[in-house]
Amino acid sequence: MITVPTPRRANILALDKAESLRQAHRVEAPPILPAGTAALKPKRKGRKKLLIAVILFCVVLAVVIVAMSGKKSAAITVQTEKVARHTLTETVIANGKIYPVLQVHISPEVSGEITELHVKEGQFVHKGDLLLKIKPDFYNAALNQAKANYQSSLASKTTAAANLEKAEAEFKRNHEMFLQKLISESDFIGFKTGRDVALAQVESSKHQVEVAKASVDSAEDSLSKTTLFAPIDGTVTKLNSQAGERVLGTVQNAGTDIMVVSDLSEMEARVDIGEADIINLQPGETARLEVDSFKDKKFAGLVSDVANSSQGLNASSAYGAASSSSSSQTSATLFQVRIRFQELDKFRPGMSVTATIETRSRTNIIAVPIASVTARTIQPKLPAGTNSTTLTNTANSSTNAVKPDKKSDEKNKPVEVVFVLDGDKVKTVPVKLGISDDNFYEITDGLKEGDEIVVGSITAISRTLDDGKKITKGGAKPFEPPMK
Image: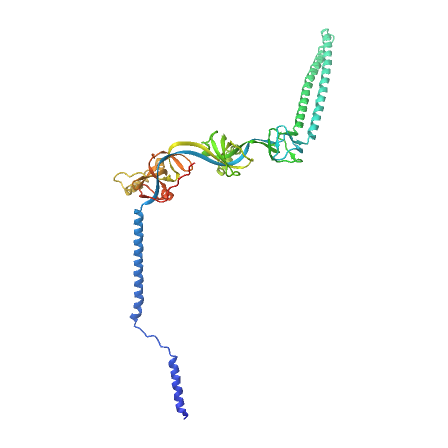
């Protein structure tokens, strides 16, 4: 059976449905807490963070203190070695070029055009071989002119001799007449003067002939210099001019460097040595030469010449003291040393060479590794009953009263020292050095054979170690130089 709602019942159902929808969309407000409860939570969180920060700070501080105390008490690990005797050879290394011992720069003495060139670069020539010819037309004309002047002077000499003969005859005839008082004294003096003039003209003509003959010789010499011959047996190592070019003579100028003829049977290395090492070099010292073109071969050499003055000294002197001082500031002072090759190969002029020159040698001397030597400032020992604070205060109080002298400054300069083992500690010992090679220093004073010294590590020797520091042996084995 179907029930039909009445209008009143329908209104009640609609109101119930609207109320249920409002309750479904309603948002409940959060509960309201008391004021004391809201402020209590952040305060507890701040105290907790502060407590954690204090704990972390204390832990870090404790770790740092422990680490610093452990570092102070920790021993430095080093490598040691006993002082022994060695044989040292001090060397000087320099770079340079290879040159022939004998080389001649060919420059003409006369100017002109090259008409014939009979050689080329690299060609071997014998002494006296024809090298080139310069156009001789001008010098032929000069020779012909000189010869003509010479013939003219000869004719002038003949004329002067004839005039002298005539003047001499007139003088004799008039002299007899003057003795017989047939002519006056003034006329006689005129004839005598004429004879003397004729005699002087003969002498002048003789000298004119000599001048003309010298001009002929000079012209012939200039003409002969238009042909150039080889001055030595050698190889044309450089050719700067070709046929058809004009060259300048060396009579009044520097001249044109046409070519270079070199004797390649004897070669030498020319190297530059600094002023600090040049005083130890002398002719006759041995050297080892390494040529870049022969990488796997070393050549024996002998020092043949050591320069007495530095390079560029004359040039700088020509410009005065100001120029020389500026030159010395911009370039190093170098001296040229020549080393003769004792054995030859296919050397060419201009090849690069490295020379190792043996300067001084010592046998059976006390020596230490180079790495074991360092520099330290030696502090003076304090007298008994004096501490560092008292010494500092005394120094500060006397600063204004007494100025430090040069001797005290010299005492504060670093000196070469070696660290010698003294039980489980090291002792700083100043030493005096002699010669050195690639691996060892000669010790002339401060150590004796058998002393145990620190030879490594480099960081410990150069920075960490000091007088009285504790050490322990260990680490890598110190470097041993290869046997020569």
